[in-house]
Image 1 (cartoon, rainbow, N blue to C red):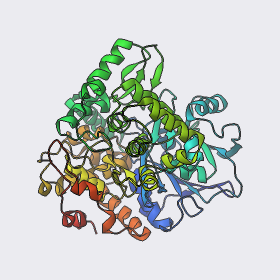
Image 2 (cartoon, one colour):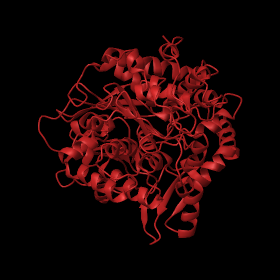
Image 3 (cartoon, rainbow, N blue to C red):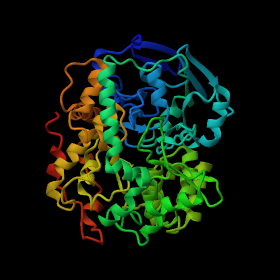
Image 4 (cartoon, helix red, strand yellow):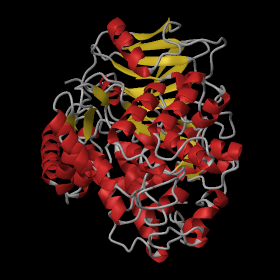
Length: 575
C-alpha cells in the first residue's frame, strides 16, 4: 500500500475556500484532544469571543483511528467554549472520525465567520469542498435533517450536524454524528460547540470518503499482533462483559451504594426507587420488548464492547438510542423522575434539539428548585423543553445551561464548575471525581478523570489527589489516541505497552515512551491550562461550588473538603 500523508484541511467560512497543508512538525504526533489543545494554543487568541471570527472549530480523529481497533475510532471536536469561556474538547463515537482518517485529514480547522446570515451544508471529499445552501434545513431537528442529507449525498457518507439549539446559539448545544446505523445519535455534547458551528454558518458537514484509503501502517505484522493482543484483552475483561449487558446503565446501583447518585438537584446521593431506573430493569425491558430494542449495540463499526443500546417502547417503536447513565442521572434521578420511558422521551427531544442532556438535566434541576416545574413530572419537564424549542426567553435561559438558570432565578444550588454542569457522580461522595471536576481545564466532566473505581476511601479528602491526577492524565491520553473510555479496561489489562506497540507499528516511531498515555496526557493538559490561563482563568476557577463545601449529604454527612492546597498544586509536575 502506498503511504498517504495526512494533511491539515482549513476552511475559511467567509471566503468559502479550502486550503490543504502539510502537518506542522509539532502537530505530527498528536491527534484528538491533544491536537486540539496544540492548535488552540498556537493559533487562537484565548480572549476571543467564542462565537466571533477569532474562534476556530476543530475536528480531529485520534492517532489510532481508522483501523477498526475496538472502541478506538473516536472523533474529537474542539474550540473555545461559549459555556465555560475556556478550552473545550468534546468527543463522540460514530462514523465521522473513521471517514476523516480515510480522507487523510489529521485536523479540519474551520475559521472566521460568514459575511451574511444563513446556513450551509459543507460537503468535503477528496475532490475538495462544496458549499450548498441549507435554507430548507434551518430550524429542523437532527432526526429530520439527517435523512434528508443522506438522501441527497448517499448513505455511505459521515455527517456532523447541529439542531435548532445550536442555531439559536444556546450554550448547551452539541454537534451530532451518525452512528453505524446512520442515526444522528452520537453527540459531541459538552461545552456549546454546536453554537460555535452555527456561528460559522454551518448546519452540517458531510464527509465523503469515496476514493480514500485506510491509513497506512509502517509495520503491518507488528500492528496485527498488537491489535490481536488488545482485542483479546478487551473481550476477556469482566468490565467489557458488564458494559455489553448493561452499557453505562451499569452505574445507577453502583453510584447508589456510594451515595453518589445525583438526586433532587444534587441535594441527596441516593434515589428512593433506584431499581426502577437501573440497568438491570432496562435490560429486562429491552429483552422483553424485543426488536427494535437492543440491549447491546455498537455505536461505531468494529466495536466489540457494544455498550450502547436501542431503547424501544412497549409499542415496538424506538423511543431513543441510546439511553445512557448520564442522562438517566441528570434527567431522571436529578429531577425525581423514576420512569425510564419518561427519561427516554425527554432524551429524544433534547437530542433532536441538538443539546447536551447533562447540561439540560442540570438546567431543569435548577428550574425545579426555582418552582418552574414539579419534581418528578415528565409533563412539566417536557413543557420546559418545548420552551427551549420555541426559543422563548425562558427557553433560551434553559438552553444556556444551569448557571444561567441559577443567575436568573437566584438559586444557589447550581452543580457546576467553570460554568458547566457536573455529570452523574456526586463529588461529596466520590471526592476524587470532585477533584477532577474542580481542576480539569474542561469544566466539570467525568470523562476527564472518573475515580469511582480507584482503590481509595472515596470519603477521605487526603487520598484523592493521585487518584484524580492519574485518571486525568490517562483520559487525556485516551482522548488523544481516539479511544473510548471503556477501551481503557482493555488497554490497561495488556501489560506490555500495547499502545506503544500500536503507535510504533502504525507510524514507525522508534522513540515512543513506555507510558505513552501519561506522556500524551501531560502534554495535553499542560497546553489546555496554558490556554485557560491566557483566557483569564485563575486558581479560583478550580473550585467546586461553595455550597458543596458547606452542605452535607444526608446519607453520609459528607461535604467536599479536599484542601485548596491539593487543588492548586495537583498539576505542579506538568508546568
